[in-house]
Structures are given as structure tokens and as C-alpha cells.
Image (cartoon, rainbow, N blue to C red; front, side, top):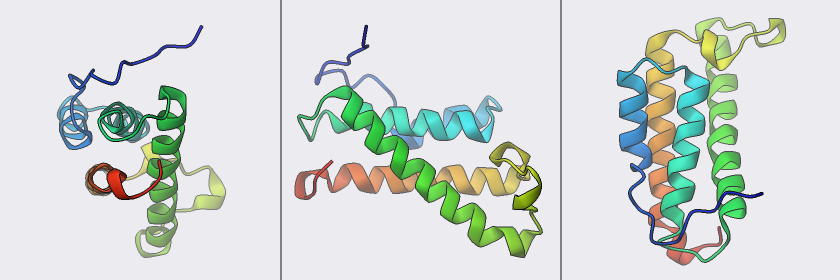
Length: 119
């Protein structure tokens, strides 16, 4: 059984709003990134006709690819040992807040450009 979200269901908060709510409630970085992807996939229904699974997969790929690039770029500067089991949830709160905020901005930009690009 596959869950579906109708194209008119825009009651899901925006990626930015869901990021702020997750941050305010103390959600882990991992959960926040997943929530951002979910919100972006839900709002993508306003722009593209692809089914829920395709939208969620693409949004998840974009959020996590972005997060991986950021963590690798910042690992040396902040001294993260990525080879020794470091996870996103191990990141200092200020870095996690910055990472999730930038991910929400990235996904908002993705939504803004969906009319001119493929999902």
C-alpha cells in the first residue's frame, strides 16, 4: 500500500516553515532534513504532475546530496572525523541550524524553479 498526497494538499508547511518548527522543537538534524524533503515533495505537487513517490525521492536526493556536500566541505574546517562514525546528529547545534536552514533555502529554490526544469 502506497501513501499518496493529492495535488491540492498544500496544508503541509513550506520547507522553510517546517525547518523552523523542527528546529524550535529540538528535532535531530536527520529528522529535520527528512522533514524538509517531505515538505518540498508535497509542495512540488503545485508545479509538476509526477507521482508522490517520484517527487519524494527527488526531494530526498536533493536534500541529502546538499547535506553531504556541506558536511564534507566543513569537516576539515571544524575538525569532524568523517572516517570515525561522525553523523549529522553529531554536528554542533550552530552548524546543524545553519545546515538545515540552507537546505530549506535550497529546496525553496528548487520549488521556485520547478516550472522550468524537470522534477
